[in-house]
Each structure stands twice: as structure tokens, then as C-alpha cells.
Amino acid sequence: MSNHDTLIQIRASREIKENERRSILNIIDRYKGESEYQISDAKNGYDVYMSSLNDARHTVAKILKIVGGKKIESTKYIKVQDGKAVYRFTLCVRLPKKPSNAKYGFG
Image 1 (cartoon, rainbow, N blue to C red):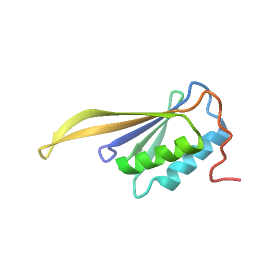
Image 2 (tube, rainbow, N blue to C red):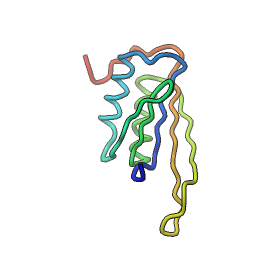
Image 3 (cartoon, rainbow, N blue to C red):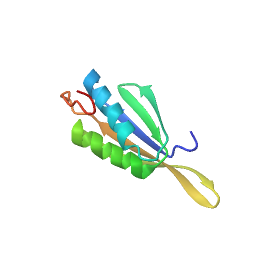
Image 4 (cartoon, one colour):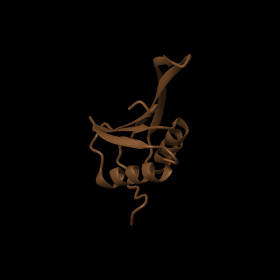
């Protein structure tokens, strides 16, 4: 995980519908830019580790625009490397209580 300095947490207080899941995965794949990413299942959603903070912010903005919800951003100090502080950025996306009917990237 060392080359993934940004974590996107996608969470819902309900079950994520299949079309929402597919829309989110399509958005991540399309807007990841040059970033490497890794997706894992988490309780009530997904964790997406991404190598670029800017690409992660761009991806989150697109998810919010298409699927809805709100974003909370935080940082966590990890270590000092080469004389610089290293932080992990976490972008938490809370999906809306009402499921989205978004169908992004598929017909």
C-alpha cells in the first residue's frame, strides 16, 4: 500500500444497488487519470486506494455529481520520509439515504 497515499471510502447506510455499484466502478476507472488504484469491499461500501490525491478528488467530485451524497476529507500523519512528513489523505463519500438511479457508463 505504500504507493497509495489516498483512501476513498464509499459508504452507505443502506445496501448499495447494483446500478450504483456499477456506476461508481465505471467512474473510478474512467476518472482515475494516471493513478494506480485498488478496490476492496468494506462494511457498508468500498475502500479505494489511489496513488494520486488530485485524481482521487476528481473521481470523488464525479461520484458526488452522478450518484449524490456528501464528502468529508481528512488527513492522517503516517511517518517522516526523506525529511518530509508523509500523510494519508482520506476522502469519505456518504451516499444519500435514497438510492440513486444513475446509470453511468452502461446502457
